Length: 199
Length: 221
Image 1: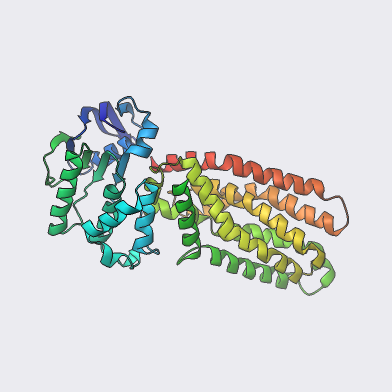
Image 2: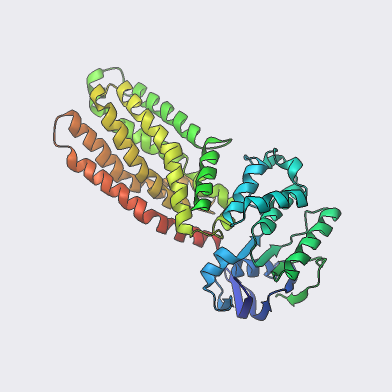
């Protein structure tokens, strides 16, 4: 399992444009880091780089002594702007798939459905759900499939006040259980975070 | 293995569910086979000579039609991000997606191929060989087609681009499949054509997923 994330002298480019250079920080178990910076500073690109989608122009992303590829496939959750839910399938099918795909158990799934109040949504087609409902559906895999590192891109944006508080509790539980959260945010998260300026 | 089985079930339900490509490909095949029959006129003899070949061309076009859905939708809605961060490697994901594409789209097309061939006056003794050849050829269509689908990710008008990339790769199965059936109907040696068809399709199954995974990684970056 991932016990450490090290960003070392990292530079990212998109096309010809340099997003940032020389970014270094490290985080360990039980830590939450908030990436802050203006629009277009490269927060999302940094998250995609940690997730292994974007190759850095220079520098390195390390996960302690773990093989990076394996660490990514087994040890982290990536929740971006898009949730990967299929509009034509029922919420129940999509939820079950996302949880099973990321290694969660069906016993966990039942508990999460209860906790996030998802049961009224399960029989609906995903395309009939609101943005906030879809986000709650996507959050379920974070809880039902235990993985150490959560990479979150503006996770709160579509949620209502009550759900923001609930998600805050879930994040606090994850951190106190030795998890790690790296999130790109504009509004501060409802948990104790260390800020890292990007760009 | 459990998660790959879950992916396989998801792919089948997407192909046969709302907005899926399987029924569309089948209807397209019926339509194009009918049009080709009309276009060739009513004379039975010339039609009989080209029946199996024509049904293979229609098969290749129908297989092409559903390729755009193979990766493009998962790319647009972010599902490819999720698929590349599950336990199984991206190569396995590509293999399962193409295999499901074959089972949901190419296998029904293989069932329809003998019907179309006979409607075009092919000899009824060719029904089973046509089905078998279309089933094997469908593997080649799905796995080489997947390479085109992955390479065209993120480009606008991806469907046209897929056709340009993939049609040359579709030539060998069409040549060997239709050629073998033609030889069979004329009582000529047919084994080598089918051996080449099988070899080409097996190579596509073995190598295609690596090419697809590389193209998908490139598209996600």
